[in-house]
Image 1 (cartoon, one colour):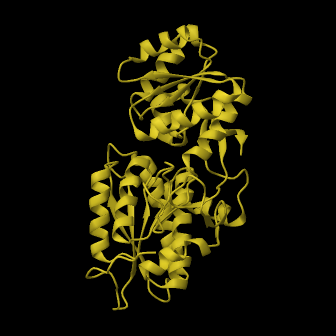
Image 2 (tube, rainbow, N blue to C red):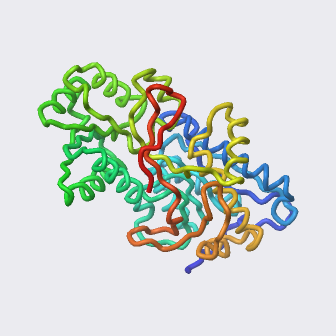
Image 3 (tube, one colour):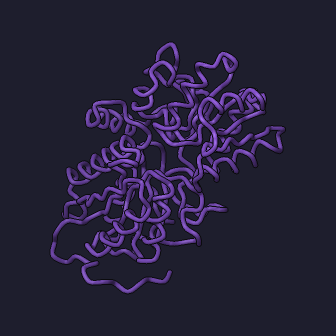
Length: 370
């Protein structure tokens, strides 16, 4: 591994805290609720590490930067955090933002454990500096495609906005469904109103509509239009990116929010560690924790384990990814090289397809598992 020369301030020898830079979307247009859950998990992990004695007696400290779903802002934050001397980077929810952060971390020789972004091509070229906890998009979305087929859907429309992430998702679905007789009909949301989407669904005889769009808009308007169109009474809507995981979805849509299957990265049953962390996160958030909160906690668990064994040396941290074996809230975390993935990847966290039960909206029904 080529190690870039250390810049001033990259090593701390004064007995101060060991710092981790945390990239989190905390303001719009970022998904603020996802950012809040991610930060809650990171903070809980840090608190527990410090309660257990820190890193060789030194406290672990988060240095948080708001990315606001802006790739340029994230890249600038990575530059700043590198200058401040953080031992590693953690976090980020938005895939396009995480990609920008990963590119800068790779260029600077700063270890980055990506918590929650799923885009397969997180870096353009294979890198030793970046590892990821979230499953790659190709893995999760192939499972979602299998769910669609098992549920009897072969004519599937996708309402899509222009984005590397959404385009990648549509391609994964098409590649998985086509050999099995499935058809993906792409609806360009730059050109269609929610009412026009309904007409396209009828004309194309679609039995399912996937929302590859931002929240709250245009996702909320599309859902409301489809729900109110009598011609589409039997249509299934889905949101593979996980928008219904967060309470904001139900707040925006009310009764219309239910029965919209999405991907969630949780086990069917928690281990004792997972159950304990779930209780602590629920108290911290005053709400049911999303899978993103568990991703945040697991990120700190991994980094703390590495920092205890390797110290705060960046090159040694990056070199340790293939040797990690840490109990996480959702299974034993280990990283490997996975075909088509440019970073060290946990293969794989548990994957579920779930939805909100219309009869009991606070309850998630597990519809399909990997």
